Every structure is written in structure tokens, then in C-alpha cells.
Length: 105
Image 1 (tube, one colour):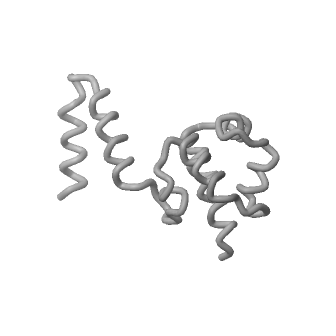
Image 2 (cartoon, helix red, strand yellow):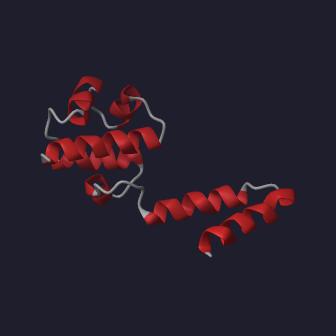
Image 3 (cartoon, one colour):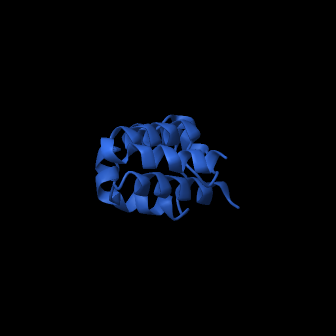
């Protein structure tokens, strides 16, 4: 697959994971929403400087812009899991621990 299509899909995925609209991300990255749309559809090839601005705006490390695997990086998933566990009410924590143990065994 062409690299600019992979980059565009990655930008779109990260944007959606953070629940940002194209307009919001474009504003944060100091670019037009139309240009962002063209990047996401693989019709434009963003510069390195723009990829760094997008990474900053998406609050990811620049290398994560080029991670084309299907999931989020493990480090970020662990942080999300820890946050979710911290938010579990005390009365439900035993059930959550049981679920995690079931997955591990």
C-alpha cells in the first residue's frame, strides 16, 4: 500500500481515538481542515514538520505517526487501563480483578 495512504489512515485513527473533529485537529496543528482531509484520504503527502505538528496536536510521540499496526501502542493502552482501573468504584473492584485474572489465565 502507498505510504501516504498509510500515513493518512494513521492520522485519522489517532484523531478519532482522541475524539477530535478534523476542524479541531486542523486548528491545533495550524493547518486547514481541507488539507487535513486530503492527508487523511491519502491525497497529500505531509512534510516532516507537519507530521511533528500533528503529533504534538494529537499528544503522541512523532514515531507513533508512522506506527501502522492495528492497535494503539502498548504504553498508551497500559496508561488507559490504569486510568480506567483508578475510576472503578470500590464496590466493583473485585469484579474487575476477576475479569483481568480470567483474561490472563
